[in-house]
Length: 204
Length: 204
DNA sequence: GTCTATAAGGGGATAGAC
DNA sequence: GTCTATCCCCTTATAGAC
Image (cartoon, rainbow over all chains, first blue to last red; front, top):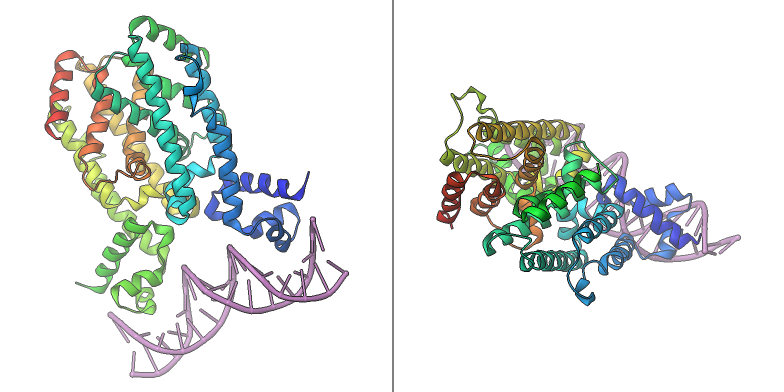
């Protein structure tokens, strides 16, 4: 593998494991057995490295957060798939979420991108909820829907952090998906609820 | 006011505003118009400062998270008060939550204390939910209760972060309390639900 | 492309005078 | 109690040889 690629992959691993603020360019170079100078030959600095990793993440999730191109609303089973893929990407780039406030405070580029990403996430989730609502599968008023939407967004963004603090860290998206779908449960119409409930069980 | 107290208060303000990792001991000294040496006369270092602020926070919330001494379960209106007081403390020491993963990674003392705090929070919330359940006011099975409990904990811990990322920062606990109570809503028995619903409305 | 060496700056922390 | 001066270490980043 090319050095440039190795640097990116190693940086991602170290960032995810120790948190971006706790990983220096020297750490990355040492881990790869290359010189710090070499690292700076391939990337202008830590921020450039960060931006490229961020771009990869945005790329990887772009399809998921721009479903409008698709024809028609999702089928129930697709909700599980959607969340599973989403959390797979989040877990793969979890350093972005672990120190989100910090990153946003220190790098304006990241702040802009991540805020846009959160907006897109919120829009997409809202669209999915509205679809369910129109199909009479989700039963609630507009206000409850907004609150539910915030609860979903919050769980998507911070579930990993919560698991970490609770010392229940997990590299699999299963629990996260179950938690998000669980938030939907009490608002679902009876048949859909039973269906969703057994779906959640199935992945235990 | 004594210098020692001024340092603590100033540190708290700066940590809350900029995040602990972005505030140096020199920043604090400069803001107070004292020398860095003076600061180190009063506190052994940044970590000692941090620990004292943490101790203050634990103190301030200790009563809330150890309700078992109280006689009997809470009345519905007390749930609002409980959450209001809790979020007031969290907002006052929000730097602890804003960079929680980071702080936990860098300071083992903080990690231990905050994990204990989260455990106490979870226990207390669980106790409150079980009380409601026994009173037939909360209708759900054990599994749903656990998921609800996690949703509550997560919201308590990360609502401020979520608001920050969404650029809807707020120094008042109102929205946070409404969001947490909103999570309860769909599981409540009809009368309690209406009561709680109007309670949420009232504080808009 | 890769290395060694090193500059430049920041942050934590201490010594010693007042 | 408070100040000035200073040290040390870590991190980022660059220069120049190979």
